[in-house]
Amino acid sequence: MAKRGKQKALRGRAGRMEGGRGSGKRKSSAVRLWGRHAVEAALMNPRREYRKLWATREGIETLDGELPPDFPVEYAEVQDLARLVAKDAPHQGLVLECEPLPDIFLDEALDGEAARPIVVLDQVTDPHNVGAILRSAAAFGASAIVTQDRHAPPEGGVIGKSASGALERVPWVRVVNLSRALEEMADAGYWRIGLAGEAEATLAEALPAGPVALVLGAEGEGLRHNIGQHCDALARLPISDAMESLNVSNAAAIALYATSTRKLD
Image (cartoon, rainbow, N blue to C red; front, side):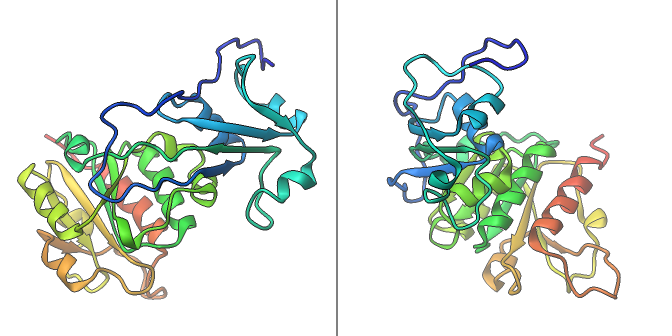
């Protein structure tokens, strides 16, 4: 199968990447991804180990590249694929079963580049929001997102579809203790800014010229007190009084944009 004359083979990792590890608990069960962007990005990711692809012939034709001749594909009808995914999930004729991505330690993601913020999520549990934040993180060049292992959704199809390929591009660090992770970021030279609606300073006023960690709280509850105490500053987005707050994924996108447009000299 080829598309638009391209002959590049889509790749799946045959074994785990050595050194792939994390400070949180590894999820060992298989992951199912669906939708063209999520599946295509996973197939192009050399760190991803695949098991099997279920697809319609029309779905295969939408992929940008070639599958190797021995790739484990099972052709199926649209209604059959619907039984493999979440209810009413837009699978676009493609469902990939694969292994979770290798874990990553926090120190592997702390590159210290001022132009590449880190996004820290404090108990953000909605997979749609986490996926959307991954997408924004990829769009604005974030070096990683960091979550606490016990209070974040597992890697899966809803996140993959919402992330539109960014799940394969942005390192996702799962940690056991978020407060300790914030201390490690401070030791690495990051200025930790917690987004809070009650803060006096705006994000633009709080942003430094150096490396930044943007810390966002859970939907509704916001930052936990202890996490806020581990931030160097609290800042708010200057939204209209007509709205009490923004969805966490919208807030993350705006904060990442503001960070990307600041002066670094």
